[in-house]
Amino acid sequence: MRTPLGRPDLAPYHAYQQRADVTPGGLTAHFLGTSSLLLTDDTTSLLCDGFVTRPGLLRVALGRIAPDPGLVRAAIERLNVRTLNAVFCAHSHYDHALDAPVWCLQTGAELVGSESTANIGRGLGLAESSLRVVGDGDTLEYGQFTLTFLNSVHSPGDRYPGIVTRPLVPPARTRAWKTGTAYSVLIEHPIGRILMHASANHRPGMLDGRSAEVVYLGIGGLGRQSPEFVLRYWDDVVGVVGARRVVLVHWDDFFIGLDRPLRPLPHFADRFDATMKMLLPLAQRDSVDVVLPVAWAAAQPLA
Figure: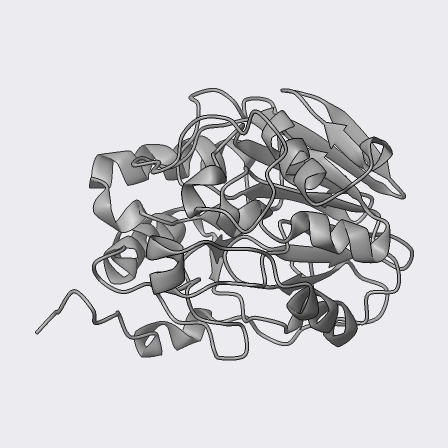
């Protein structure tokens, strides 16, 4: 019997879990849960979000939260991050932007995102020279990477809409980390193109004329949407860019620390099993490879 505090079992989907396929000279990705992703080639490293503090449900609901610099430092050491060029945030909710400024403080990376993300950086003491605010269609280059930021929309049911209008000094209530601008980020490299699309929603036509071999596809909350919504989402994101591989993100229970294996959110928060039942037939229809990433493990998404 399904109970609100129960959660879907990952066992039926083991065939989709990330495989070890790392070879020298490729573009390497490390997934850190939610939509946090470290991408690196031989000389340049970029981080999406970098959310590793992952405070528990009771603290998020009833207390005040703050980034844990010790957990960020441990992640830097575990991933052997020698240099980090930029940290970009998909939007400014705490599960994306809470730790991003700390990564920048500890590595010298630039913090990239909306004015809301910049105010989160300011609240933790980042210098203005380390902040980069981007708008729709803006392009940035880091080494051989080119990042294009495309304005998108948060998934339905945004609990903390709005913008962060002044420096956010933690600890603070979870609702202080307002959405700001939600981005879909096209990452181009001589090896190939990756789309980081963290929120399970889109603006119709926003990706027209764009292409990517791999999409990191946000599916948070998708299990509560209609099959028609899911079909439009798939076709207008995955289908439009011509992706051959989809890596599913923002499905894991981010109230659980990264020292434990990733698990889907409980039934009261999402319906991972329902999402998979809708997505997998679409992937089969379009001959698209579906991957469930494994936290901390190295992968080559473009291999």
